[in-house]
Image (cartoon, rainbow over all chains, first blue to last red; front, side, top):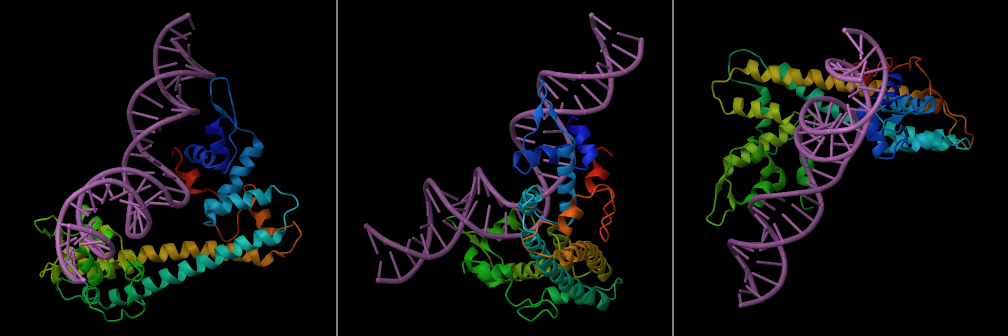
Length: 149
Length: 149
DNA sequence: TCTTGACCTTCCCATGATGGGAAGCTCCAC
DNA sequence: GTGGAGCTTCCCATCATGGGAAGGTCAAGA
C-alpha cells in the first residue's frame, strides 16, 4: 500500500500520515526503490487507532502513550484508565468554561432588542469597567493574572 | 501612558497590545520622540472592551466588528445581537461536541478496571474497525470526509 | 514507445491567540 | 554617570491541520 491507499484505508490524511511519522507517533514505514512509502495492514490498524483516539479529542502526546500501551501486551489497564480519566477531567473543565461563556453571552443577547436602535445590553456589558460580569467570573482576566506576575 | 501602564490598566498584556496593533484591531497609538508608544484613557477603555469580549471567547475578527459597532453611535443593535447569537450557536456546537467526547470516553473509563491486568475496554474500543463508537458518531472522520473530496 | 494525468516526494507557509526570548535603545532615580 | 527597569523590533514556539510549489514516478491508453 502506498500512502494514498493507507490514508483511504485508515481515514487519516496522507498529510497527517507524514506528520505523524515526522513526530515519531508512528515509525517510518518501508520505502520502494523510488522512495515511495510502503504501508501494511498493521500500519493501517495503528492509524485507525490513532484516528479514533483523536476523535475523543486526545492530544498527540497522550495518543503516543496509548499506542505504546496498546502494543504492550503486559500493560496495566490502570495506566490506560489514568490517561482517559485525566482527559475526561480536562474536557469537563473546558465544557464548564464554554458553558459559562455561552450562558452569559446568551443572557445578554436575549436582553438585546436586536432592532435598528443603537441601545444594546451586550455592548453595555462589554464596556463596563471593573464591574463583575455576571456568570463569567471576570474580575481579573488571565492576562491580568499572568502578566508579569 | 506607555505600553506597560496601558497593559496594567487594561488587563491586556503588552505583547498582545502590540499584536492587536499589528493586526489592525486597534489603531497605532502615538509615539514619543524616542519611539515609545503613548496611550490615553480612551485606548485603555477600548482595550478593556476587547479583553471582556475575549473572555466570551469571541474571535478577533468578531471583536473587530464589535469594536466598530461600539464606536458607531448610530449602530443598529440588530448587528450586535447577530454577532452574539452566532457566537452562542458556535459555542453550543462546540459544547455538544466536547460533551459527546467526554461522555463516551467517561463511559469507557468507568468500564475499565484500572488495575494491573492488561484487559481494557478503552483500548478495545480504540482498536475497533469500522464499528460505530457509541456516543461519538464516528463512521466517517473529518479526515475521511475532507480528504480529496 | 510516448504521453498524460494521477500520485508520490520534500519543503515552506498559514492558521489563532498567546508567550518566550534576544539584541539593542531609553528613561529615571540615585 | 551608572544600573536596572522598561521599551523597541524581530524571530520562534505552540497544536494539529491544510495548502501549495517544484519536481520525480507510475500506470494506462494511443
